[in-house]
Image (cartoon, rainbow over all chains, first blue to last red; front, side, top):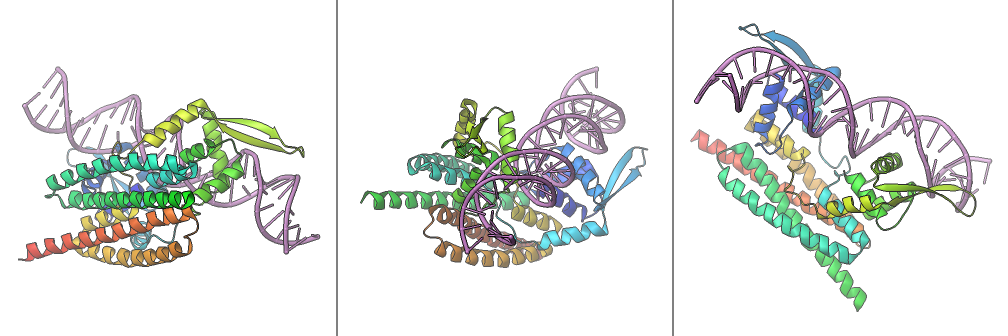
Length: 177
Length: 177
DNA sequence: CGACACATGTAACACGTTACATGATTTG
DNA sequence: CAAATCATGTAACGTGTTACATGTGTCG
């Protein structure tokens, strides 16, 4: 629902056309979430189909046809429920790293420790890269904010990997003794 | 790809059938990620189609037909690349909370502060709930591990919301002065 | 002129998800 | 016996994603 909701949110600031929406989406997300233009059009079609958005052909001065998409009342209502929605109502989204570690644990502690070690070193590298990115992106608010998010998450995931390892080690010790 | 990879990982421990796989998936993920049985069968079909899994009709003692799915060599190879895959190769998955805050910021700091406040209070409640869940799930390793993950993430998200707020406040101050 | 950004779209496919239908077996 | 659990599956739909086709305008 992310693309859908994102486009709806952008359209709430005023009518726009497909290509523009793609650029705005990428600008707002600090260039981190790239969008294939095609997807903007397919998603806009679906929003029209659902009555959340209206299309209007807007012939500009030079006689070129451009489609302008505008949010409808129904669209504004759905957007409102999106703003207000909070996690906790639904099961947390499945996460690749979490799933991988859980599956590894079910395969046996040995396998799990290997996976944890590898993921940790990759995550550490990624974290450093993102800290560098953050330093060079301090001018752009959107980029700074999303990089904050990615960094905070990566730090949390690293802490979690440590916790998992500790749990596994403790388990191994208690079963050996 | 989560369900697909998860089933493949479970099948790597030995052949099994659909219903069993559903139960195992839920057990391994501490009951946090519920799976509709139907999806197991559709996903297994697709794994067969792609040659990663073989089906074999296994007639048990009482004459009841059961299908047993087994991972193939190709399946083991794909699973291997899954274990080794790390983030950083791909753009981070789009996250609902992150997107919401970014979109809110693009709508204006006022709107963003409201969204942040509301999400923070919901997240705080969710975090407390999960800490309670964690205390009562200490016996089940899988549940304990996934709850660790959800708790660590929630804490990180809360910190991030604070960071966002601080950035917005700083921005407002510097523009007023 | 050629490359590049702007601009619109379609067809095809992937995965996730649910609702529904069907039947056997087990258990209170 | 009735309800729950075990067990298998299909049809339909939703979103995300890409590859491709097409055309205009602009700038070096």
